[in-house]
Amino acid sequence: MRTNLLIIIYCIIIVLSVMYATQPLQPLLAKEFDISIIQASQFTAVIMLFLAISPIIYGYILEKVCAKKMLIRASFILLITNILLGLAKSYEVFLFLRICEALVIPAILTSLMSILANIDKKNIKFNMSIYVAATVFGGLVGRIFSGFIATNFSYEYVFYSLSVAILISLFFINKLDYEGEANMVKPKIKDITFILKDKRFVLIYFIMFCMFFVFAGVLNVLPFRVKEISESFSEFQISLLYLGYGMGIIVSLGSKKIVNYFKGEINTIFIFIAFFLFITIFLTNENIIYLFLLLFLFCIGMFTVHTVSTGLANSMKSSQKSLTSGMYLTFYYLGGAAGSFFPSIIYKHFGWDVMLYGFVFILFIVIFFIYRNRNLFLKV
Image 1 (tube, helix red, strand yellow):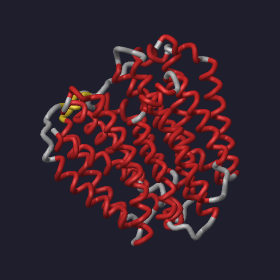
Image 2 (cartoon, rainbow, N blue to C red):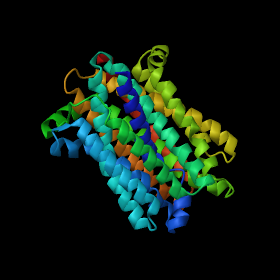
Image 3 (spheres, helix red, strand yellow):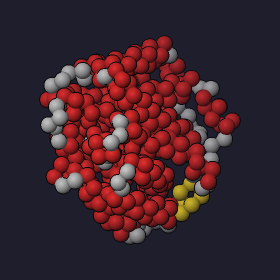
Image 4 (cartoon, helix red, strand yellow):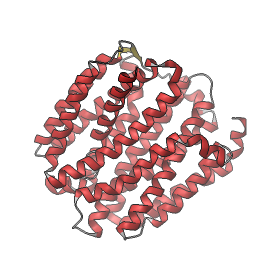
């Protein structure tokens, strides 16, 4: 049982590392391929987009499939695409390969989540918290690892190194003691509209779309902002700015205590969005040390809202939990995809400060809607 859990955690960390490895490298890749910040931002945005629409796509194509077989096949494709990314010499080829990865990463994560939920049914909640913590840790490791390798060797070796890690994961996956199926949710229009008639779900989905839009926008444009402040900063130094991302692990594991301290989910969400907004204003600072410290607080705000919102959304309906969770992830990653792309356009034409003020305006709207509709959650 413990061996299975360790294998799954390792695989999650590697997949999330692949997903976010390009983020600190975006200025370097923009220079290498002679492309704009808008084009470079697509390397992360495309995976976010497919994570958003994958519950719908896979739900209709694959209602039942062997989770382990899907995991092996998708991981093998990820191995090949990562090797080819290191060999890619043009923007078009590199983007095409990232699109291929975007198609298989949701399949890998779905398989891993399904296996994790079934290997120990007595501890599903604990295992899901492990899943969340592993995804956060993977996102952190992927960014720092890629920055370190690119600075000390070259960006190509980032993808070759990840390929070795994926190859090791394939070896471990074959050792998994699980042969069950991954049940895909096939969403029906009437079920979706029924859920969206509940204003509480609409508000939670709206909150997370906007939160991840702002969060992804800041983290995606951040490498370009650092290069704007000083060209002398290396990819590894840029990647260290993402260390605050690790706060997501602490927050996800201590969310119950946070909710109890602030006397309820909606109070906690309201307070931490206000906190998130407050920190966003101060990200206009040009001092890298201050920026480094502020990003820790920025991540605390984001991950607290995300963790508490997930729990709240899952507690509001006793039935159709798979569909409500799937819709939550769809809105969440749509916000991330949009945030990984559109803010880069604002940054290119108007600069960092104007982009941040736009984010502040969005967060004010979110706070206004929460305040107006706070009584809806008295039923929960």
